[in-house]
Image (cartoon, rainbow, N blue to C red; front, side, top):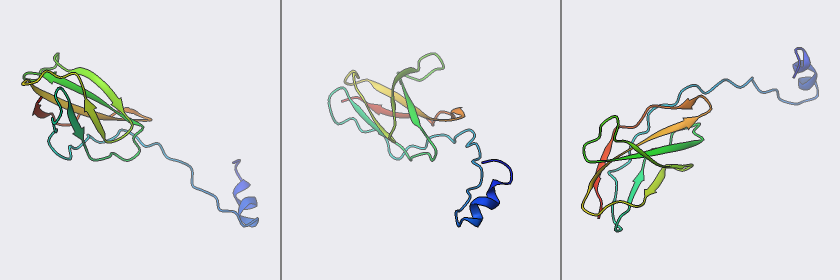
Amino acid sequence: LKAGDEAKFESAGLDVRAPRAPVGLLPAVQARAAPGCDMTGECDLNWQPVPKTKNYVIEKSPGPATAASWQQVGFSTKSKFTVPGLTSGTKYWFRAAAIGTAGQGPWSDPATAMAS
């Protein structure tokens, strides 16, 4: 749309949308419930959807989480993810971050669960 074209469109009975504004950085992911580890070697994670998110990145950490212990386990386009390949009887920490057009948002608070 060029400057001045708005009047032409409106005179034809068409609506003119306001220009899109950048979304900016996304907020931190908020866990919906504690992870569920029903099946052997798997934990189900879920969280509140973050508006304007393209996808989420998910990480795990065995034992007490440190800056160096986090390992990426996958991506999801939905606000849930099943983490496979866990060792039964091991306590894990999980976190997720939303990814949008401005990049990755902050990490969620870690959630813990014992793998079945």
